[in-house]
Length: 312
Image (tube, rainbow, N blue to C red; front, top):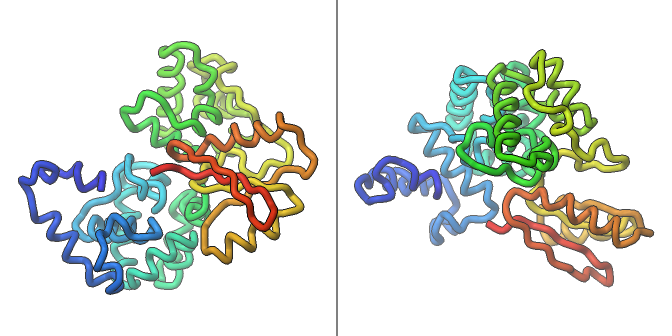
């Protein structure tokens, strides 16, 4: 919906063809979905795929501020040529696959499998980091992609994951924050490898890595410190939409119950014996969710689960 309103003239009602074009695609979806407004479709991948089908068929590609810029891997493109290459591959793909296949591949992090199914798998190795991102993005993704987005948008503050992982929490002045942002922008503009930056982040080696990449550090190395590495932490540098926190001994039970409900949740665990300080540490780190966060306690067959989700 944000993308629709950003198109020239659409928000003011001056252009109606765009809306008609969007509506003309309803044959792609099941009859039950046609009876409700498409911005209420669930899961979200169905709506995002629907908008993308219209975009890519009419010469558009997802812009930096759209979810599909990350969810469909356009963030991995090194430059405009890379964006064009990926867009052309998607045009071929949607000409071969069914809409249902496409949005389910998004939901199940299996877009690479869909490319391979329709004879486009040969292109994946040429798309740096595309396969790595698309194999996980339906569940979670590396915060480096939000860092890259931040360097390209007129946003003053980065999201919490980026602030914590990439040093912005260390900035004391706007000048420091801007210098840090310019440094990362330079790294991406040079075609720097995002996943190598992510690995440097979660190993606590940002300053060393960026010094090698840029030949100099335009900011103090102190600004590039972060809490990593962390022992036995499988979500370092990751962004999720929905998470649940439970004790290690209850993991299998909680996983089974969420599977039965058909809810897609990243289940994180803490040691059975913990103090409140450790618990609060988990909760603080879970503030890396994409938007504002809802936290609630749920009792599942006598097991207390702390649920965290973004509020759209």
